[in-house]
Image 1 (cartoon, one colour):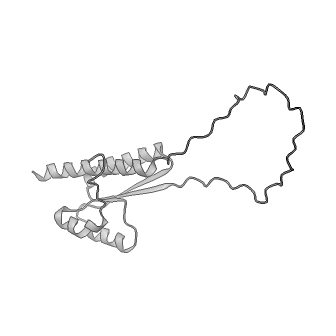
Image 2: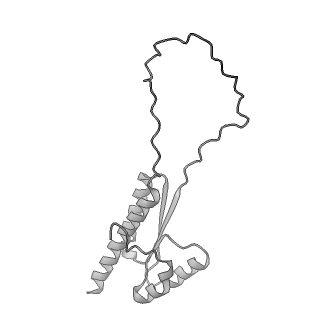
Image 3: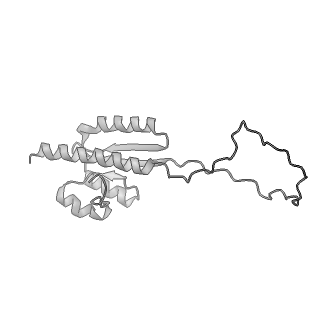
Length: 157
């Protein structure tokens, strides 16, 4: 295959992987079904109680009810080296962020002769590894294979 074909294949894989990862990181957790009320809001009970309730009075709760935790924003980062596709990936990230307020997708592009491998190593040393990053061929795979998630069993493969 030509270099251009490989580049196109890698770009498509990067975009698909980013979309799949964003989907799984941002989908809401499934909630159990809420119990349904037995009376519709407009219905009234048909008979009034004939006796006063005999239950002992209840004490007020000693603690204030806790509020539901605020939704956590998901940060999703892409670090890539193809400057020629940067405007398209940036536009995709911006659009995704607008449509999904609980997600913050950032794209960082380093290319044009810059030391991408060195920059990725610096991110690793600083504990700032991106969610998705590009590798450069078999040598890059050998170097970064311990940081790559195995997707061979994923439904989309």
